[in-house]
Length: 107
Length: 145
Image (cartoon, rainbow over all chains, first blue to last red; front, side, top):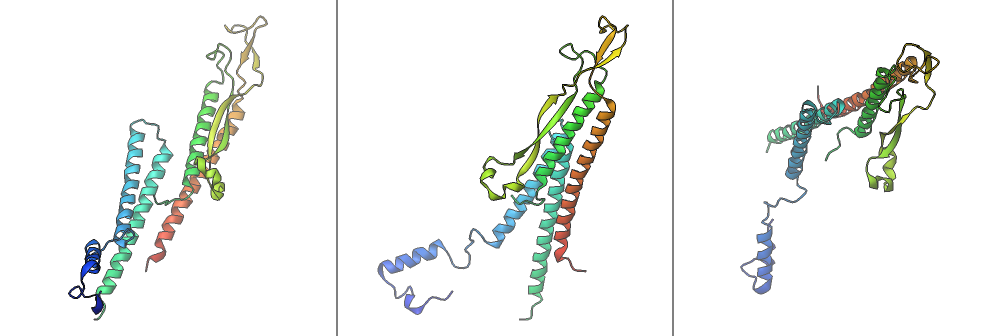
């Protein structure tokens, strides 16, 4: 982002300059990672898929250990883990595809 | 948490309920000739009563709560029909007239219940299978080839 010449820090004095500097320190342009950014969303997706896998593993362990997990609960947990893993793989495939599409673009 | 297989909790509870029902039927069949239950009387046939429960307590305020019902075995009741009286004079539990009170379990009835329970379990399994297939087919929307 190019600054407006009127707001050039060299020419600004007093509280306005401090305010502007504080702003730029808090949010350096270009490196800002907001709450809803795509990378975060992807990270959350991976975490949730991992959570499903952990749940599936725990239920299978509970089944083997003679806990109060029934057979169908373990199977359903495994299926959920499997389907969510496939969802993650699909998202990754799409992402890679669009990246390759971008790299093929003529500049 | 992402909900991959929607409505699967209800099906899961139904599977658990049908399993419990099958266990009760197995107990009925196993004790079909038991003349001394824990209270000393002949075994009484037991029946499972199902009831639908809400998945979450606050779900009753949710307009979508029609989809929040799960099934649960509310209680296991005793069948109060009279015992079968069978003439067996040599039996230690025979009364003065040589009649023995046998449990009010009819094997053919239990077998019919077993089939019903097994088919209901199968139906719920088929819901699980179809939900999974639907999810996998949805994931293949973007596939080329």
